[in-house]
Structure formats: structure tokens, C-alpha cells
Length: 455
Image 1 (spheres, rainbow, N blue to C red):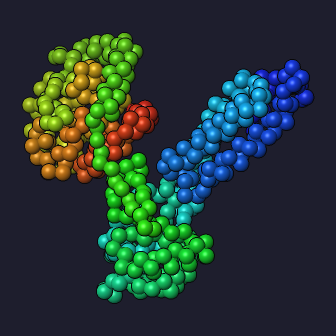
Image 2: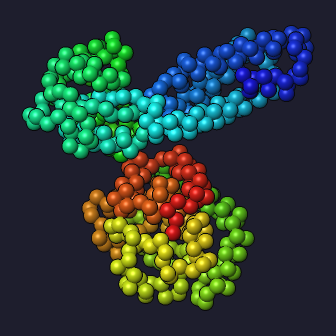
Image 3: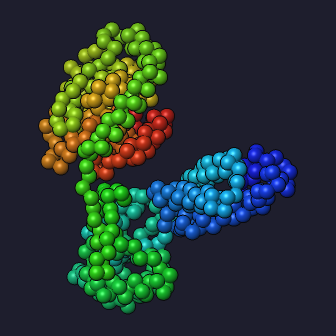
């Protein structure tokens, strides 16, 4: 409403019955109709469904799709009936309205996330499946409260043990029957809003079908949670075959056009950032040189794509003999796995501590990106000794170029455990996309200013 009213006032002024050249529609009434139609389109695209609110990109996609379809229909209608719609009016209403809607949804999402962290505004779930699958699903949902799902009970059809509490998730087990009536009784006991069916469920397909009918009659949701982990939505496609929804998981590839697009993006952005940051890098170089003797840049061998070694550049943030003193500090290592980390590392200089806090020491890596040994977004560039100790699965990190930033940086940096760091890197390798890179870059800006986990 604000966008449409603003577009009207900016384009036509405050005259209530303004008509362009006496032949186009009255834009005051058109504005009222447009605002109502916009509201209707947002509902038609299901942008207010509870399952899309608060988490994931689907909410934003639906808002954008509904808005673009509305104005596309207006353009078609105007063309077919030869109605001269003022371009300035539409050119203001669409971008301002869409931006305002997305901003409002983002603000609502922040409020909803805080509310859900306190246990409010959640959908209560009854989990169906095998014990191990239930424990994994419960742990995943508990770690992502912003999604709005609260596991409250479990149901293990066909299980042989007689335990009443699931050991890992601590959820009460409300039954083990393999018939629809048993599941419905469990739902009535826990007053669940939805049922999540996970892997290992020992129910006949016909029983699941009947359960779906009964849940629909009771206005209780049915969620299927297959045993697929760390698979992003764009890689999942469904196909109906003989009434069965088959789930296809496409193989991640970074070849051909995708690789060229990523490389061109890296060249363009890194060149632009080098030009913009050149004065800042000169100042940093002078500060590093003034504080301590030694080279301004620190060169370190890192392992890139497919195991190729390269010299990674950073502004020197430690004393010159930092590598020689590493062995004497190993006993005070605060990192996990193969990583060495210390919050109060005595080798770090005063200038270096500031540079690390805001990731300014990594600016020279823009030259690594421009020359092709690194990418703007990717897994953390590992040391050769780390790669030598990699397990077989972890070596998948080397299928793409290491990045200046990545999921590891926007998710806590040095505060991450070795296992979490590996999981995030493998998730990136499995689900890479140019749009995902752009989102990570935006999240990096916030992470740098918050300086969480930077030391």
C-alpha cells in the first residue's frame, strides 16, 4: 500500500482524480486495485504458509515471483487492450514495493527467529521412524530452531525394545504399533501439529497412505524426512512414477559453463576489490613494516584444487620466527582436529591482532584469486600437513579451489570444531552454485564486522 501510494504521489501529485490526457484509467482507483491485487497474489503464491516463514529462501522467492507475475500480467493486459499505463508509475511501484516486502519479511524473520529460540511459534512434531533415524532428525531440528519445528515425542513402529525414552534425544516413545490407529492415539496424547516420517519406519505403504488421509482430516501435517543429509534443495527433484514420488539427487558438477562463470566472477570481483582496496593495503603494509622488522607479506604453502600446491599471500600478523616457535606452543593448542589455534597467541603482533580481528590480513589473497590459485568462495585453504592426515572422505574438499571466504568463515571461523569445519566444506563442495556464492559473500560482510571467532 505504501509503495503504490508513494508511486502515485511521486508520479501524479496529490490530485485525487488525476487522469492522464483524459483517456487513461483513473490512477487513484487503479492504485487501490493494484494494492488489493498484490495482496491477493502474495496469498495465491502461498507466501504466508507457516512452513516457509522463518527459514530458507522459499519465502523470498514466492514474494518475488508473486510480485513479478502481477506486474507482468499488468503489462500484458495493457498491451492487449492498448491501455497506456504510465511507465513512471509502474517503474516506481514495482521495485519500491518488492524491496519493501522483502525487507518487511526479513524483519519479521528476525522477530520470529528470536521467538523460536525461546520455544514459541513452533510446530510440535511427532517423529516416526527407527531409533537412530529419530535421534538424528531430532538433533538436526534442535540445532535449527529458527525453522520452527519442535520434536516433542517419538513413535517407533515395529521396534523390539521396550524402552520408553529415546536415549539420545530424550524424547518419550509413545508406541511401537504398525497400524494407523496406534499412530493416531499417539498424536492425540502429545497434541502434535505434524508428523515427521523418517528413515527406518516399518509401516506398510498402504498404512502410510491411510495415515496421510487421517492426518488430513484432522488438519495435522505430514512431513517426509528421507535419510539425505547435507543435500541442498536445488539438487533434489521429484518424479511421479506409478503414484510413487521418486526423489532424484543430481550429481554436483563444476565443469564447463559453470566453471567458466565462476572463474569470470572471481576475476572481475577480485580485480575490482584490488583497485578499491589498494590505498588500504598500502597503509596496512606501512603499519606492518613500522611495527616489526621483516617482510610485509607472509607466504605459506597451501594445497589447492586437486592437490596442487601454491603460495598463499597474507599480511604478516606474527613475528618473523613464528613458524619456528610453533612446536613450543603445541601443548597450548586450543584448536580441534588438525587445526592449531590460540586465542592469545604470543606470536601475534599488536597490528596483526587488529588485522586478524577484521580479516584485513587476508586482503593479499585477492592476488591469489586473480591469478587463479584461489577463488572468492570455497573451502578453507589447508596446509600440506593437514592434507597428509586427511581421511578419504575429507579429500573431497580438494575438488574445488580454496576460497578467501566460505561457509566456514560465516559460521564461526576459529570457534568451529574440526568436524564442523569439514562438514561445512563438504557441504559447499556438494552443493556449489553461483547464487550460493553470492549469498556467502553477503554473509561474509556481516561476519567480518562482528569478528566472531577471529583470532
